[in-house]
Image (tube, rainbow, N blue to C red):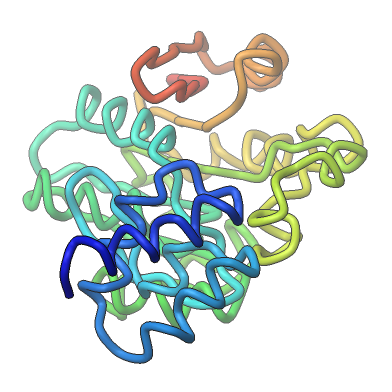
Length: 252
């Protein structure tokens, strides 16, 4: 494909509102397959990552599929915090894992960790089992998904629980609200509903001195930290200016 043809594709994508049209055009061409169908899907607003079949996350190409939550760069703050608190051989569990992007990054960046993931959405579970070893991915609702042998042994417990208040879902970009599952977006009336459940059960599953990491927003960070302190965790929050990611950090 010559430069003029690539520019024509980029022009179509730009007209549809794609900010990084040139980059997206190049990726669609690289992907092969039915290029015209892929362009049409993107013009209609389908997430680029779903069309490609992968999302870039911390240098990895993480598998995704239609109907799953697409990993965001800001979630890398959870990986950074996990690495900062991890010791060799630590047991790490990612709850609300989606396609297990955080778990996959940790397996790649710190292979000596013992990493697991749990997710309630069946479609996401299927994809997660392509991103990390299938036997390390558990299906179910939060702690109910985990084998009892992990109780009291988890050194780093990670959750990217949904934290968008229900009333704000309608204001999200169409790519999210029309193509991603509501269970991965809706955090309840104040956005903290799932976080409350994660925090309430955390101490039963954490090892002595274990750490709970939860992605949140800067606006909600103080509230998330307060919930952690209410159950006796020593908690604070941190923000990554580069990715705009925020994490609450609580130690047992």
